[in-house]
Amino acid sequence: MIVVVDYGVGNLGSIVNMFKKVGAKAVASSDPAVIRDAEKLILPGVGAFDAAIRKFHEKGLVPVVGELVLEKKIPVLGLCVGLQLMTKGSEEGQLAGLGWFDAETIRFKFDAEHAHLKVPHMGWNTAQVCREHPLVADWDEESRFYFVHSFHVVAKDMDAVLAKTEYGVTIHSILGRENIMGVQFHPEKSHRFGMRLLKNFAENIK
Image (cartoon, rainbow, N blue to C red; front, side, top):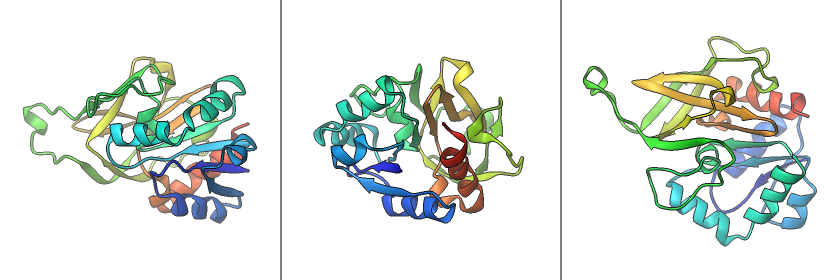
């Protein structure tokens, strides 16, 4: 069973429904007992970094999820702000991130050539695969995903970067290290391309 961690942030119903469409069992829950029984986890997220990480702590779920991810090595996939929470911190706020990736979340900073680009980066964009990984297996080069974000992840550990997206700067849009994965976009809003990625997570990640 895939458990979408319900800490009060994210498009929980849409995520669960998308998994059902690809034939995977998924539930959203804030119950530690349900989360502990998960075979895989989804860490969703929308909105501001500090508000999201604060709610995660307030729900008392950080130790539970941390034990499963870091000690029991349960596969986890962060979505949008969920990925950003996995970094060491964000320029958007003051609170520390989970630090699961050697990465930071920074504000978009454009040079003069790209100064016309709007923030947030909102809409459809591609993700170019950088290295082979079960999460991006059978990748369509035309894969397009729905982004909504004003801050983006920059990984210091380049081996963790599975895919990049260009929007005035290079966005590390898919990260993966051991059992920990994350995407900067919203697969639950990305139609068949998002379904492919979630299907890969459900079926290919062991």
